[in-house]
Image 1 (cartoon, one colour):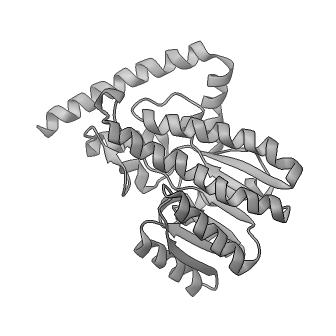
Image 2: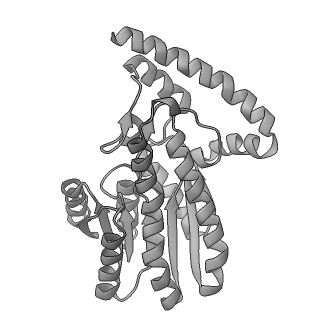
Length: 276
């Protein structure tokens, strides 16, 4: 029995489809209930087993109600993927207080609510696996995503600590740190926001540089690593190079990030001028 928050699109959808293909009973929980239903219908039409539920992860009561309902109905909870997330793209100087709150509520509190509700159930049953979605932005310097970075650092720390605490109870914890994956969040997503204008030309250049991975390929690789109970899961694996630089030479990491930020700022300034 698997619950996936943010399961209607992007990484969540790909994980749901891959897990269902491997025989898991999958609960797709998302605010985008129409999309969640479509995913569930498609999975069921191919012989899988999936259901959809509307869920606002910022509401602790809603999250608790769903998880407890699923547990009562099925008698077990094998996995919860705390995956729902949003991004606001822009510099810190451009943020409103509401922007900060929105990202914190979804990306951090949403994960906390999932852990808070699922962890006691898993401890009681003596097994289960909590999988939290962080990001490479939790491991390296990523300008223009400051609120996203802050929340993903927190999710990484939460997951590492909980992995140690949970082990004596038979509960596993993994944190997924995706590189750039071809999902709607790359353009702000349904609930995110772009505070700067990114032209099609810049978007194409960024795609060539970052080489986004297809979500279905990503899901296969991630689930294989989860099956092996990996603690920190980095996919695509070549992003480990950036993490190693950050870990072993902080001055080098800063020196590399600064010119990249300056180049990005020049490109975005030029795009803004073109727009006007």
